[in-house]
Structures are given as C-alpha cells and as structure tokens.
Image (tube, rainbow, N blue to C red; front, side):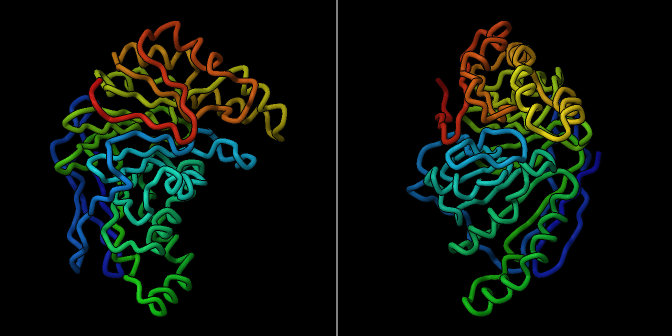
Length: 338
C-alpha cells in the first residue's frame, strides 16, 4: 500500500507519497517520505538524564477512563536508544510520566501512534507542546495511521491563540515549523536512522482497521510493541526472534467486574472480546514468535486490585516458558543482550 508523509513546516501542510509498504516479515527498504524543514533545525542532542538504553512502561492501564490519583496511567511506552527517546503512544498522563522517568520533555524527538483510540493519542499534541514550553528547538517526527497529521494540525488550531502569544511575547520558535507528522497506511518500514529501524504491521482491533504494532531493531536488541490487538497469529511472525515483546492483555474474569459498573455493558463486552487478547492467547503468540522476554502491559482492566500477577501470568504460562514480566507504571528494563 502507499504511504503518506504529512509534513507540518513553514506554516503549511505538504503531502508526499512514498513507495509501497511490504508484507509482514519483509519490510520495505524505503523509508517514509520526508522533506527537510525550510530553516535548519538543531540536531538531537544527548542528555545525561537519558544515559543508558532502556525500555520504560510509562502507562499500563488499557481504556480511556482516568483512574484515581496513584492508580495506573493510560498507555504509553518509551524506548531510549543512544540517548534519544522514542515514544510509542500518548495516553493521558504521558507528559508527567516522562518527567518521572527522568526524560526532559524538550528531548522528545520521535513519537509513534499505534491507533486512534483516545487512550493512545489523547496527549499527542500536549506532549509536544509541553516540550516546546520547556525549550524545544529541535525537529520532532510523529508517525501514525491516517489521521495523525490532521490531529496535530487540529491541535495547533485549537491552541492557536496561546501559540501566537507565546511565540511573540516569549520569542519562542514557531511550533508548527518544528513538527513533521507522517501518516502511513500499510505495513512496512516506518523510519530508519543510524541507531534504529522501525517497521510496522497491522493488528486486529475492530472496528479500527488502521491499528499497528511496531518493531524496533537496533544493533543490540529488537523490541516489538503490539499496540491494541485481538489474537493475531500474524503478529507472531512479525515478532519472530525478538528479544522483547511488549504485549497487551485482557482478563476475562476482570472484565466481568468492570462491566458491572458501566452503563453500556453488552456493547462494551462485545468490543472487548473482539478487540483484545486473553492470557492464553498472549502465551501462544510469545511462544510462536520465540521471543526471549514477554512484557505484559495495557491491562484490561488495569486498575482492579483483585487481579494479581498470578492472574495475568497463569494463562500465559500454559504456552510460554520464557521470561514473563508483569508490567507496571515506571517499570524499566535495559535494552541490551542478556
């Protein structure tokens, strides 16, 4: 399928069309189309706060509902590679979670959106904005399914008064000229630089058809982040041999408790069962992929104290004998070979 790179720069929107995406397991050799900004932007710089390649679970609770103070945040995952942060999804609370992880918001350079559910993109604009008000002067690239570029354009319109005032009164660079938002609409390579290659594949998350998993390949380690998905055997092929698979998970018993406190239980039950992965299925995917470490996240439900670590791992263990990590907010894992 074709790819689209929507570039926000110099005050206007440009659409570019790249080469076709490739099938799972054979990503395209061509990167998403891009263009240089009209004026030079500062290159990404290292920061002592970012030292050490690592994976950080910033938010692990699936679903849009905001929990009580101290409860798990909405989904977001961070990879720090060669002192540069790569952010996957921006659920509510991502900015504060980044600060808590020691990542200056003005150091964010690459943002990836798995799909357009609010618990994954609600803070897309604010994450970049919060970096801007703390000194962002470098280019930020945002990647995601169709609609990602328009979402950021709409955010700029929503904040236009504040942006104009702060640009003029505080002599900040125009945010519009710093952000380059790339839409893609099929599996294949999303981006590549000297440190990492990122590819994407579609997953199963009805009714949303443009939902993706991402694979990050560095010289030392490979990490796959499932995004939201029902049981998808093709995902195992995409994750084949990965060092770390970060996968969503849903508890069938837990959702019954959840459904008792919502006004639309039958509609929500239908959606959850069709769109998310149960523990035994997660185990099958990890086993089939032959991954070394399975990290569980995006728990559905994600704030039920009755669901213990054993609740989440029991079904997984029926099929997967490797290392299983039950995720929690702020959990960190090194990105290095064992």
